[in-house]
Image (cartoon, rainbow, N blue to C red; front, side, top):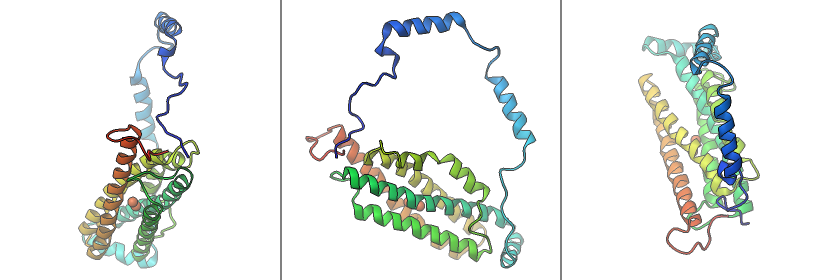
Length: 251
Ligand SMILES: [Fe+2]
Ligand SMILES: [Fe+2]
């Protein structure tokens, strides 16, 4: 199915589609001036007042009885287990969402097909399963540390709020496969940086075995990132008809 993102059409969002009317608009705005006094400093003041008044962005749930022992050990080492649990909760949520992102990308593939150098069904399905395996790994780790893997931790909620546009874009029926890969790129970049931080944290807290398992997850995430980048690159070059004729250009 053919649907190129760069197709030329009747886009009227720019003011240059109507030089006469846009000149009047600019003149009117200049004549009228600002609708309120002051500048952005008033908004900044309100923001700061709110920030001082409100409490924390959620909290980390207390560990289970089994986890109390682990937490105490971490405290002895000078670490705070709650930070680790918070970040693990964040990873769990994001990896789980990652599974859904690749499911959405698979739907795009079924409708629009792929291109030379683009993602195959086997590759997308493999990454989907990797994300699922990572989610399971994080859940096991949280439970091993005596945490509750079903709890939404502050870091998990922050990341979910921040990245909610990615799944929304991927399930938008207007979006084609090549466009949807931009969402996967955002997710994979975050994946890579987040696993790196988790490994560092696990090592610092003395969880050597966990750090080693996480390193294997990071290795896999690096492969994901490289693949997504190359798919976007080949798809974009084909659409721009860089080099050869655009035979097999992404739809
Ligand atoms: Fe991931
Ligand atoms: Fe990934």
